[in-house]
Length: 395
Image: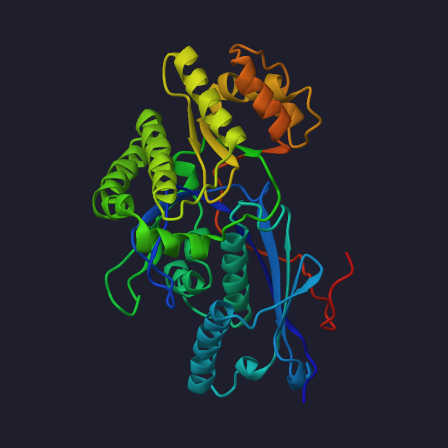
């Protein structure tokens, strides 16, 4: 028996939806009630790094394992198991077709993963996590699958993960087949098509959220009348306008749909019975700040969006950094928060002043910022979290 340890490492990005996924039509297969569209964010700022390894020398009694941010993580859940099963069966098919291949599909997997941002803080950590997991194992198994094919597998782990298998601007097509074989992601435009898209994340709370997305969305599906209108009319219209806005690099349209869709999503959460509130007073202050910035600029230069949590993600174009980042920086600079990039904030003038109530809420409630922008999809890397002998690498 060979004790060779096979390894593959990849990084995967966070994506933030501008047309939101909310609601499943099949919880087991993670099939959505509507299509969605997101911007992939730069991995220089937000990424998951995952190493997948396997070896005949790993004890079968231990089974598969995952170490996440240095802590053992449970992978016995149905969603993770669905991903592992699908990847293994694809590898087994390759081995059956070519008996000379090592039988990697029969070896236990040791997976080690690290985020460079807080997990479960409303920063789509599960999307980057499952995208990295699936891509790393696919690389380990040398699967010929395309990113769209792999998105079918990642979707079963975390719905929005299917969009993190691509860079740039990405759509998750809901599909209509009962088996989910047409519910997958595709790239609407590469990052290089509209490279000056930027995002400022205001981290309002890095605590775990009160109502998890999975249970929240199913309560909405079951009880909200507004939700039915959202999936029948609002989202299909928003998808069409958004794809056109991206193709034409029309920021005003992009921004309007982004803000309207976020509002629509949170309205269906409030219309859920009992209601679900993910945003708080600080979140609402961020909305007022964006409105003030756009009003003073005389055009739409910033767009807010909120996922299932209070953190604000504010999209803007690089040319409008002063109006957008400058305003928030000068409001927040007295507060001791990290995340500002000194090269980007150097010389930014406070051209826009905010209402003191809004400024006060932001100052008291924002714990850190993340300055980032549109970026690439998963990247193969030679940075390994598992050493050549199969133990976690010393870092």
